Length: 423
Ligand code: GLY
Image 1 (spheres, rainbow, N blue to C red):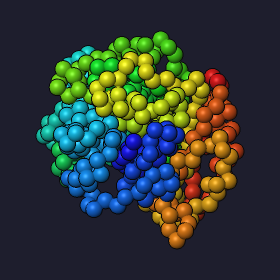
Image 2: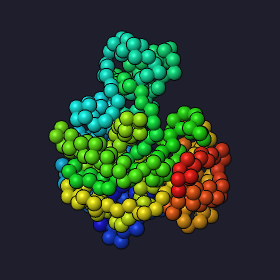
Image 3: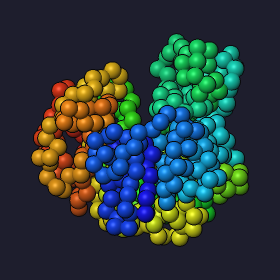
Image 4: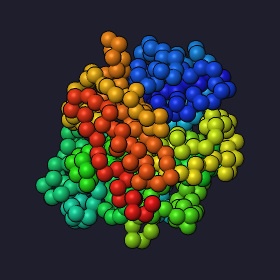
């Protein structure tokens, strides 16, 4: 079988790593010069980076299955374009991807179907938005741009002045392009966050896996937000009862509501949940695997993941066909100095081959230059480990991580620390 994986980060490297363990697959194709990906796949150059050219190239390659990593091509409709040409594709349609690409679509879906979430109002007029926000009070609201914003579309204002600047920047000055032309203003809620990942073919769904992600760049959740600095599974507060209640009150109603909206969701449903004092509430949905969460999902998956991808692409996923290892997992992201703002590229990386075998090293932003592995992004490497306790995973990773060196590299030292006492 020939499988094509679209995307070029640590998420896609981990998917390709898992697929590479499956003997039925003869060839994995990628369009990425990520060094980790290039070691496990045939790396082709794209003729052009626009969606239509990529789709044309994929059609000419005629793979048995395409797996789409990032949200942008999904929200632009790559799955629709490929399936129209009888190419099987893992990833939701354009209509279903609105669950991530339009925050207004997903909030309405939740509010109309009694899926627990915080109350929100929607605006495309600056003055009306400003009046509403000032009446609510800056401390009590979260402002979200409607469209995709690469993790930069959520704002928690710290003063009235900042609140007005945010609205002006996104609604009048188009700081986020069209993504900020419409916004939603949500009531602010508080609690621990958890991401719940569930495979679904739009009717049936898998047992979920729950993961806690660290979004801030520095230890103790300080500094700006990032794409994710590390994560662990399961959360210390997770239980079968909590899982059952999230399935009953959130996952099942979401899958059913999407079907009823003629937007059947097939792929990986990623639900961001806050554990409030009134119970779990949905903060957002994503239409893809998280990154770096995928770098734990792949090692935690028991068996052949290709069957699940294929069953979903063929709309015949069996309930309970996915098994997660009875283990704990943790990963830590190594970044380039300056991330998530400005950072240097093409810094030589040393030490990858010195890591012990039990550490899986996924490449997020690397490439080969002049026979050396060099950095090629803000998030550079992800070290993942599976063991019997979060404490063991932390020990395994943090005793090895200093073997990796490049100029100005850094990583968070507190990933999973809060879960250790519950191990
Ligand atoms: N790690 C957060 C995300 O993938 O959106």
